[in-house]
Image (cartoon, rainbow, N blue to C red; front, side):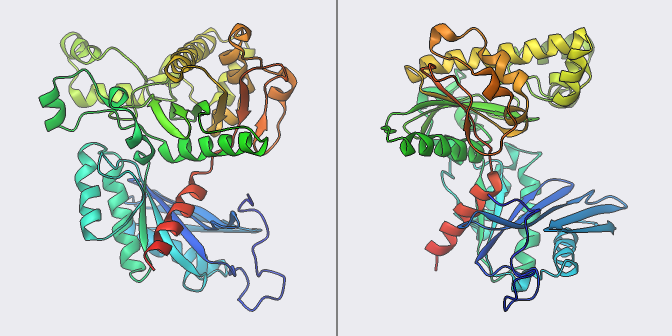
Length: 424
């Protein structure tokens, strides 16, 4: 896939359009946070990025923004009081970079929405009813869905005549078997308050698992029952077990707190910790929630969440960093082992996202000593810095181990385009 630093179509080839304006139909992808708005303009068919950027510090006295397009880096600094103002900043950045959004053949706007609940199993064209349903699901994702609604409202106001499509992080995991998505909680309470495993990072897990399937298919192998584990390892981290293209388990649950150790989140922890900290430390629910989500994980264990810092500290003999790495890897190995049994065997393991793609030490430690289970890593392949999908297992390995760069923006754009065309 062409990165945003690649030459922008029309910039030097004498095309009919003004410089910087793509010829192909494009999709504008928006990822709205409570104080930020990430954006990307791309051709989902050619898998080519024309521009990307971010607006930050929305609602603060002074906002910051930037757009990257080819050799152009367009900055902005000034007040951004709300998401509507942020959308105007986005359009101004494109104008200043010589890429008017109105002339960029935008045929759909794709919105990342974290929580789709049980009702959204596929991307959905946004109308007033869908917008309100996303807002209602904010009780399940209070840090994410309200911000997504703000971004949706702002974008629909600015682009009222373009189809807007919601792509849900949870959609892929609505296909989980009932036994995998159900907690052993009182069924009446669970039903009333919509408590079940929803998962997260589903757009990435779907994209990566499809890339793995395509890799096996290109070798002429039957993929109808392909058994794979996807490890999405970023600051937030999650694992999934996928069989024949359908997810059968995932590590995140009602919220993104459950599962693997993460940059600032505990992952799996005894739920009675809440009661213990309330009784023993006098902490209220909000304080405990902040502790488990923002002050724990790798940050809480060793004071660092960036694995470049952590691996450097380990090389320097930092014992806290070493222990944090061991805790992180121990949890990963538990999930790889349990998912292998859930799947009834294993054909592939895929590492993705910032840590999964770029930290060979994590991959090496996670799979060390598993030769008896048919998993043999090739040290030289694992250490290589090569772009694209690549196999890092040894030729004799019964399980294929791959690095698969994730591309959630591309996946959102492709799904948004599909929905928009179906509505034509």
